[in-house]
Length: 95
Image (cartoon, rainbow, N blue to C red):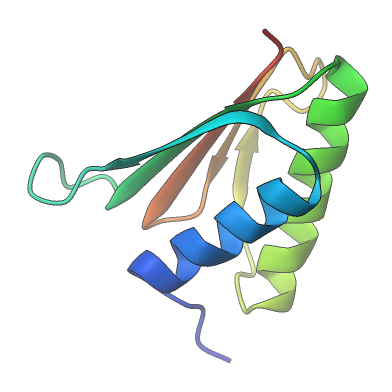
């Protein structure tokens, strides 16, 4: 299975965060500005547990969509979690 790219992936991320009640989600297009990703998503959660659940569910959904290795940083503390999905980078924060 080939993982989705670009806008399709962004839509999947947005839907997952919406389903998990992420707060203040911001979607930033990076196309033509950097080569590291096409989009960046920044969102917050209500607690460390909320951030943890959102990150874990997003990783599970991405693996189900064909991503076999999703880079995740900060999951042990959950004050801030970064998920590198290739074309989309996701930052989840506790406000």
